[in-house]
Image (cartoon, rainbow, N blue to C red; front, side, top):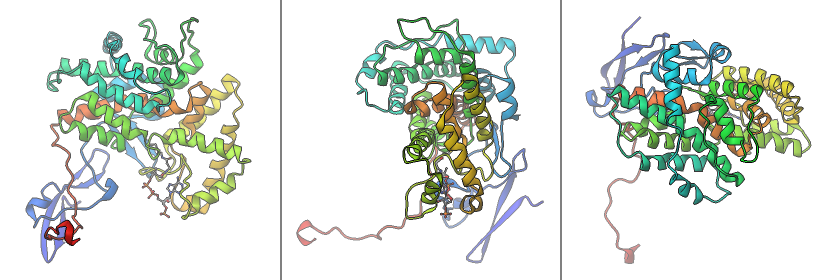
Length: 428
Ligand code: CMC
C-alpha cells in the first residue's frame, strides 16, 4: 500500500504522506499543503472529512456501529464497570488499580465544596433561566475562584485540576436544578459514591433523609458511561480548540457546555421528549410526523434520528433502548412516550427516506425516557449529558495539551468584494 498521496493542480504534482491509525484508518497528512504549494488550502464545511488531531482516547466506526473507549468495548464497560472508573480510564488511559481508584475518588470528594460566593452569582439568574446557561456560566465563574493557571507538564497539578473539575461540575449542575425549582442548595456527602451524590444533590430536601434507590443509581451510572466520550464531536472539538489557546480547563469546559446545549447536539435529548409529547398531544399520529420530517419545505426533523458519523445503529442507542425497557419495568412505570418512541422508530426504520439516508435512532432517542423515569425534569436532560461527557472533555483537553498541539485556527476561502474605495455618505 502506498505511503504517498499525489495532488495535481495546474499540471504541478505535490506529494503528501499517508498516515494510518491503529485500526487501519487512513489519513492524508496535508500539514505542508499551503506552504509547499502556491497557498492552496482545503475547504471542508462542518469538517466532514477533516481530522483535527490524532487521538488515543476513543475509537468509533460509524459504518459498523463500533464505539470503544481506550480499546474497551462500550457494552463491556456499561455492563462491568462504573462511571468513575470509566472516567479514570478515559482520562488517564488505563483502568485504575484499586489504590488508584480510591485515591481518585477521595481526591474528588475532598474537592467537592464550592466557594460560598458562587451562590451570589447563582442568585443573579432568574428562575426561568435554562440550566445549561446556568451551568456554563457557573463553570466559567469557577475561574475567578481558581485564577492560577495549571502547569500541564506537572503531573500532580494536572491530577488535582482534573479531580477538582470532576468534583465541582456535578455540584453546579445540581445547583442549576435547585435554582429553577426554587429549592435550597445541597452539597455532596462523602459517605456516598459519585453517582449517589449526583442524585442526592439534585433531589434531597432539607426536611427528609435522602435514601438512594439502587435501581435508579444503577440506571444513571450506565447512562452516564454511554455519554463519556465520542471523539471529535462539536462540544469536544470546542473544548480542544478553546484549550488550544491555552485557556484553562474550567473556561474550556464552559465553552463545551455551551456547544452541547444546541438541539443538533446534546440538546436533542430534550427536543426528543418535547417532540414525542407533542405527537401524543396531537392524537398520536406517528405517520403524520414521519411525513413532516421527509418534507423538505418543512423545517421539522425527527429529533433523535441521524448522526454525523453513524451510518448504522448508534451502539449507544441499542444499550439505552434495552435499559429503558428494563428500568420502566423495574420501577413499574407505564410511559406512553416510550410506546410512541417505539412506534416511531419502527415506522422510520422501514421508510425509504430514512433507509436511503441511513438515518437510525441515536443516543438521544431513548435517553430522555430514562431521565423521565428517574424523575429528572426535561430542562435538565442536557445537563445530565454534560455530567456524562465531562470525563471525555477533560481527557481530550489533557491529550491536546500534553501533545503540545498548535492553536486551532482554520483558514477560509474569501468570496467577498475585491478592493474598493470609500464612498462618503453624501454620495451613497
Ligand atoms: N430527520 C429528517 N431528515 C434528516 C434527519 C432527521 N433527523 N437527519 C438527517 N436528515 C436528512 C437531511 O435532511 C439530509 O437529507 P438530504 O440528503 O435529502 O438533504 C440527509 O438526511 C443528511 O443529513 P445532514 O443534515 O446532511 O447530516 P449531518 O451529518 O450534517 O447531520 C445531525 C447530523 C445529527 C445534525 C442530523 O441527523 C440531525 O439534525 N438529527 C436530528 C438532531 C439529533 O438527533 N441530534 C443528536 C445527535 S446524537 C447526539 C450527539 O452526539 O450530539
